[in-house]
Length: 133
Image (tube, rainbow, N blue to C red):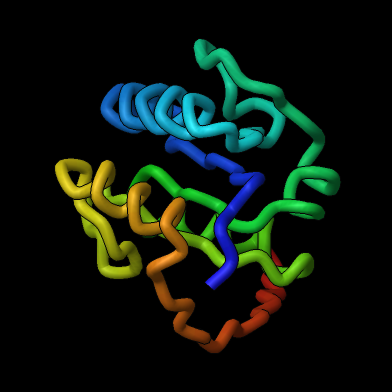
């Protein structure tokens, strides 16, 4: 597999554990020469480059979602058009869509940098809801 050189990070905006985990991941990745960026509004309190949502995913090798299922869906929405895979870290309530627990993050990042991972394809549905109120 390809060794990632650019990773996007999408932390839950209101969850302190997500911010702490994001800061740790950003530091870990930078120490290994990986470019890191976040979408505008998600980098508050983090030492990282922010960019508009439409410019976030192009050029990334992976997006790291740090939150629950809602954060994972938001990360997929940001990454999908550019064909960027998303790895979810469960620092939320549910975590049905995430793959990694916070205590396993360092091991998961090591595997990413070593190129020893697989990407599983998933279906994506687009839904439009029309409501009169």
